Length: 277
Image 1: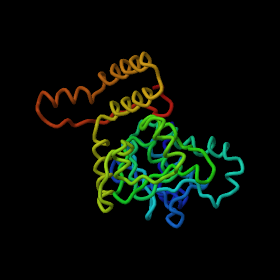
Image 2: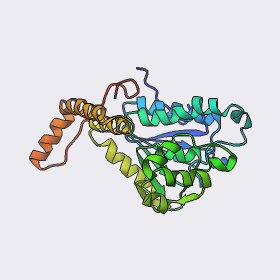
Image 3: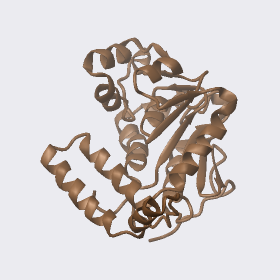
Image 4: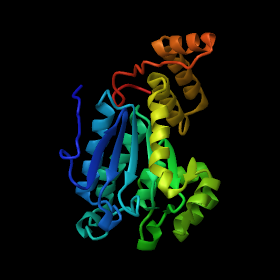
């Protein structure tokens, strides 16, 4: 497996990468466009995600935006990208959602401002979603004569049911961070000035955990969204068998017996993208 080690200078300026211990911060960096996504930005973001997932020293990823916006979705100034919108979604939006969902590394969204359209999809595709109090979410595709993409339709229907998902998709109305929390779309809402610290703390807690068990948990939970119960039960059994043989399980049992905090080594699966669920 090729190990990618992205740096802020090796990526396009529109996406920056910073390591804080075992946590990788991937930041959309087009504040003058509220971090709207054009094709170069989407491709740089995908490279950053894959690079962080491949780096053994990275145990958790935080995705956020620079300035007053998280991401307002497609950059409508990039008109040529909408000439064949289907191909654009298939080739450069769907791979982002697939990467976040498919990687073993946990991904935390730190939503610092408006998350609109595909930006909403990016945020809600993450494993944990933290929102600043001034953040907002809008499924605004219909306002420009388009339909939800970047995984938004699936998340909204699974979380809210068809009637509320349809209402949000057709009105495009904005949800405050507080309303998004009440609907179960985000995990927590924090003061804007505390968002970075809270995201880092949550990410560090994940990074310090049993990486193999967390990776397998993510795989089974993602599978459970669409698979039949028998398939999920079989996956749970297989995953448990793997986890029970890990050093981290032995350490967890020993720590419980000794009444101390466990010291996990963080041994993970060899390949997050290639191994089966």
